[in-house]
Structures are given as C-alpha cells and as structure tokens.
Image (cartoon, rainbow, N blue to C red; front, side, top):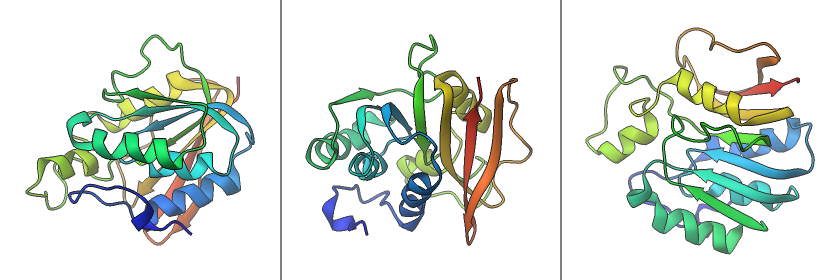
Length: 196
C-alpha cells in the first residue's frame, strides 16, 4: 500500500486512491512485463512512475509535466528518492507539444489526465488545480493523439477516466484499439493498445 507521507506533494493537488487504483490496474493488466522505457503524461509529483518502477523493470522514464514551476520541487525529489530507474528524463511541456517528431516509442504509457471539460462542474479558485483537473491546456483528443504517436508497436497506454468523462469515442487510426478494463465506483481505467 502506498503511503502518501512517503511522497512530497503540493497543497493544491494531492494524490489519492484513484492513482493507487491506476497503479494496481497497470500491474494487473499490462502485457509488457519489461519496459525499456515508459512515459507518464501529466506526471505531477511522479508517484505513479515511482510505484511502477519499484515493481517493473523500467530503465528509462519520460515524465511529461506542463506546470514546471508548480511541480518541479516535488517531481524531481520524489523520482530521485523513490524511483528505481536507470534514467529519468523530464519534459516540461504540454502533452500537445510532447514527442511531435515521434522519436520516442514506448511500450508503456500511463496517465492521470484531467477529468473534466473546461465548462463542466465547479471550478477551483486555484488555477493550478484547474489545470490539473480540467482540459484547459490540451483537449481530450490531444491527449489521445499524444499516446498514439508515442506508443511503440505492441505497446499499451493505460489511464484513468472519471464518469461521465469527455463525450464520444476518440478518433483512432488503424492498428489501435481502446477498451475499458476495470472500474471502481466512478473511476475506470482505459487501455489503448497498438497492434502494429
């Protein structure tokens, strides 16, 4: 069981049971048991990468986080102290900007994307929390497009999705499929697989 006290976290956004649910589901469902590299989109404090690296042989982790000023002092120390990696590479950019040249082709991608559309629900008074919880920087389809261009052949991307989630199915090219693989209350984990 992950102890939140083991990790540095900002006051405006603390990890919870949903990230723990994602880690457990990834370990249960991934087909790739040895990932030379993985990508975490929206890395935040890096808890998901730290926990997965302790249980999977991952050499390199690409950690993509848009809010450098807000997360750097949490993400880097957590990865340095808790992750079992050969190398951690930090990408301080949005998912829409990440890997546009498609040079990174990872067998495993994990993500805890925003759960809400910009116009839905009650907004936080803290804009940093809004960026973490709402699709205000990149759209839902831009997150999917990033996974598509960054997923290697035979790879899997798994991410958290909260009901009701963004409307409609994402647009996928041939050779990719997605499915819901596990649910807990209003949260589910979705897997995008690349067949070729």
